[in-house]
Length: 210
Image 1 (spheres, rainbow, N blue to C red):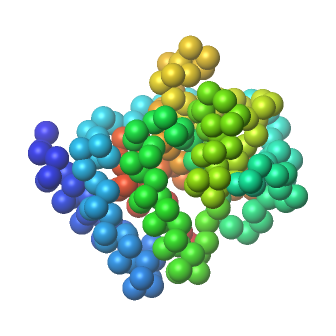
Image 2 (image 1 turned 135 degrees about the vertical axis):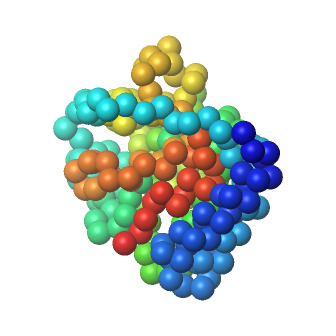
């Protein structure tokens, strides 16, 4: 395998090329082009994400309209994010790869807004307590799936994304650990996947904003 420095340089070049397509604004492109700041040994892993040809099971009748959601302050959201690209962010504050990835994710979100293509991120946490999840949502300024109830577990099973600590609950048949993003439409159909655990900051180029 090539040295980490070579992989980081390759990731930067990839991000720069994709940035011209994703974000036409100079500011947004500059942000993407600076992703090499975050691509290093802790972010750019050579481990390939788990893949499966098996269709994703539907564990519930959840939709963006019916799903219970809270805002970053823990208050109920009255409506879903109609018309905005939306992704579930699977992560936890105890996960070093998650906290290392989040500066790049925040820059991506800011760049998208600057380009006139704002995105919404919804935290699906793997925290061990409701208080820990509330603190993470507030720090990230993200909407969140409630800690209590079945929605978090439904989403993890539906998209086969959960942390290594949760294998005792969900098993080993996952396609990815955390962090990861699943881009969805209003009916919770997956339309994009960002394999951040495997690719770090460079994985954000998988999310094409059209």
